[in-house]
Length: 427
Image 1: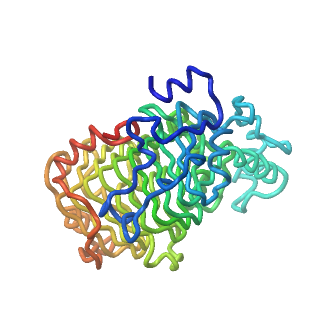
Image 2 (image 1 turned 90 degrees about the horizontal axis):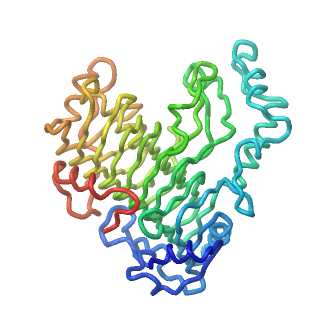
């Protein structure tokens, strides 16, 4: 009987220390292969592979996961997640909902009445209801924000390990591996209204499913990231804007560097991946080096990825576009995206020119692209379509990727990714 089944059958909770030989193959000891993207640069990425037996944990609930993470310590550790862990639970494992976090007299009805633009105007929310919202949000953050320290490997056991409601945050840490996990529904109970965002105002949420901020040498592999459970498309509209509950699926910001994201699935979400968080963050120059390969982007509206400053290699990925769509490749300030041999599938109303969008970007290298099975030149079509409205993008991004494995044709990669990307599919 497999380890997870034994744990469930025995009613185990919390942290269970196990010997490294408990599985026929211990993926917790895997390290990033040589030349597998930017995270293999230099000493590479080994995560918690050096952990001793006392720091190899199997966890089955939030309390056990928190103890194993050890406050984001740098001690080498391997954390194996068995079954489903819900971050929105108390210390006894009982489920918490938004009403359990609400404090200070907060209610959505009162919040909407207080900051209705027709009466409140365009000023930032302030006063009792905004203070209550902040206090309530802080209570949720105490439960769902999980800090991941350096020299850590987090893996799912078997083919059905799930972490829901959590925001895994690698903050100013390095040498981290996250693999074989279905991480879903980082749901914000208390979005804030921002009147001046996008001209019409918008709702801002707090939690990325995985957030790398000031992180280095990170490998994310065979994970599935989604809003499963509470899709934003089913949320109501307030102040003429969708009441968003989720932020990014995987955001890489604030000088993060040397990251490889491979064989992962990004699904059913609006803003999937932001690399570089601000046009004025010039300290990101020379950083934000990221490789994305053999990933599936399914029903993603935008940011797959959107890039500022970074040298980002995007190859052998599969894009499945549905009706609600804005763009896939976002070319922003000083970004240097090198995209090759990617496959796009789109409905009839989506055109090739829609795949790329530029904000102050100047260059995009691309080649080997397939669109609904036909070869296309993204750059040529983008420039022709936007002639006169936006500046042309050049092909010269100033670098050529050297750290990568075999690059297959877009057609071959398309088939392989459809079969093999996501949690539970490590060969």
